[in-house]
Image 1 (cartoon, rainbow, N blue to C red):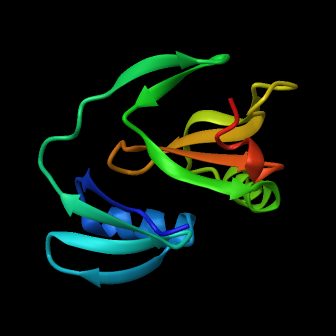
Image 2 (image 1 turned 90 degrees about the vertical axis):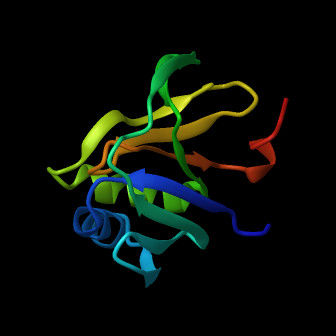
Length: 137
């Protein structure tokens, strides 16, 4: 699978660096005074300073209301559990939805968690026991 590229708005580059680098463990790439690249599990995300945040709405999926827009990464279950445990051990995480299982016992069963970065961007991290279930109908 090829890496994706995502550009997203942030308010402050230093807060953004601290969150993506120190909290999520992203390697930092190129940067300027107005943007910074990160490797999010091998995918290129680029934080651009913007004065006005993106709008957000909520939509109901399974048992929870999820923020739209949001972005994140689908991980093998063992990597997802490691990330979830690391985030739960911190007291500075802005949780939208703590780790839980969605679609339990159904096609597409998955673990998920939602957090916000310091600029209010919503991130979702999913874990699958079998990646074959990712696009299962």
